Image (cartoon, rainbow, N blue to C red):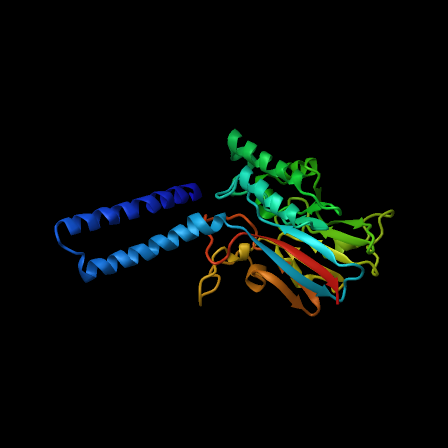
Length: 323
């Protein structure tokens, strides 16, 4: 359906100017203008044409770099520059290997200390078994592009609901093959000059293995794997912003995607579409509640409808500092 909408948008982009030009030429040839009703209709159709071109063909192809400063009482040590990429939907409309490579290049140019990938690497709702060979290959090639990301403290990821609808273990394996550390209620301690830090990754709500849990992620996981020390700073990745409702105070920053910032952000009306309760409460940007911090990325891809309006695709660079 999305591909059909894009094709119709391209057809309309070409057809309306041609039709309008031909109609005006015929009118001038017969020395007869459209009249006020005709001009009104032309104006209405032209505005709709422009908005459609903008929302379907222009804005989804753009890329904004959000540079965000965040402070937290739970953070200690040197500032951390976090590159954030979310919701690539690699096989979806307006996406492809060339665009993915461009996104990776833009992120590498920002020279982040660490990169987090916040899920929904796959587009659509169909499972792997329902996809053709060409589509599967497109998804595999898209996941391999993340091997080009460069960050001294590593590239870390969680899976999203679309990944699990497709095939969670397959997406996870492909990302690991690309050198990405994929976590599901897991964590990793990272040593650096400015003081050690922990990165945690929560499970997705649609995971077939577990449900998101800060307690499991930060707590003791085995006799030889004790809980994350209280005096060491932690950031946590999640696909859904909904998890922030139960984020513990000790987490300096939760990073989430999923919302696409609504994809459509209308003047006066705001974002008419929210894909979850958390997306309504924390749709986009940096939030603080009771001293806890959350950043929700608008992502780079599209879902359901191949449109963006007032909410262009984004990658983010969040610099986290101690308050």
